Image (cartoon, rainbow, N blue to C red):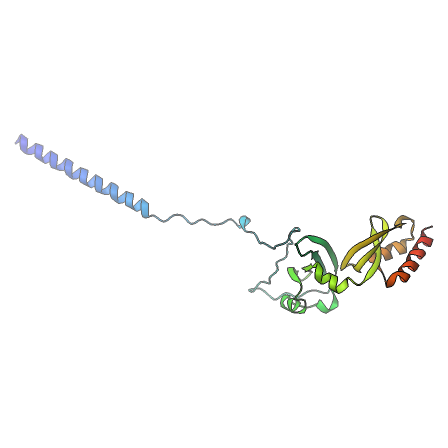
Amino acid sequence: MVARHKWLLLGVAVLSFCLGFGLTVWVWKGALIAPAPLKVKDHAEQTIDTGLTEPSFEESSEENPDGPELYLLSEADLVQTVVSDAGQVLSITTSALPEDLVGRTLGEIKSIHPEWRIVGFAPERLTVRILETHMEALYGHLSFLGVFEGKVAVFRGRPEIYQRLVRVVGIPISGLPDFEVRNLERGIPFNGEEELSLLLESLRERGE
């Protein structure tokens, strides 16, 4: 009788061990195949590479395909960044949007000016990037008088669009009448050395 009870207890112990071992294996396998939680990227980590060496602009270079089509307003600004062939920023100018671009869409601007790299497009601002070689071909033959570090200076190019300093003239603008200073700040175009000499002579007389 005692021996029979011993075999019964041994059988119960073996059965408990087998059940416990099986349960442990089942839980362990389930943990291995459980899917890893999805990682949601924070919006703050998302960036847009504009390819600019200067500070990036806030407008997008592409229109939203799901939103309404954007048009340039008559009061919009044109921001032009002139860069060298090596990508160095030479100048950044802001001017009024030309009349022929008012009401245009992004696609139309690209068709009209394929030489522009459009890096910002919004109804109130068009931001473009232009190679110096292209600007030089368009405006390098033009010249004008302007202001550089408080003195009259000779520039090559077109005022408010493209300019390269040629030389500084020793005429301080502090002694010139206000209207002449405003004219110089806007740029006074001239053709040839003879016209330049007349303009400088006039400015020297007014500065005395």
